[in-house]
Length: 83
Image 1 (spheres, rainbow, N blue to C red):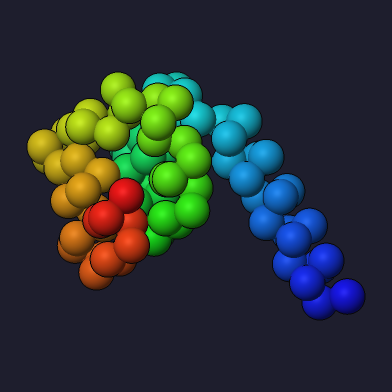
Image 2 (cartoon, rainbow, N blue to C red; image 1 turned 135 degrees about the horizontal axis):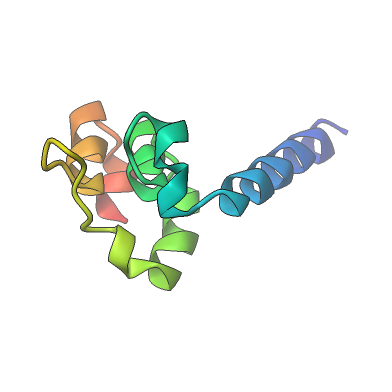
């Protein structure tokens, strides 16, 4: 029962998260694109599925010149850094 509950939560989150992954969504993520935000939060499973389909967002810089790799390293998310 607990597994199903977590699975449902995760699926809903990813569906909602994937639905707003556009450049226009940057205002929802404090000026970060969705890849940068996911790296900042340590969502390595999301990154591993999303990055291959949208590689152009991976090295995109924010207004301070930081990429997704910078955010993942800054927050110490080693699995996100590896992705």
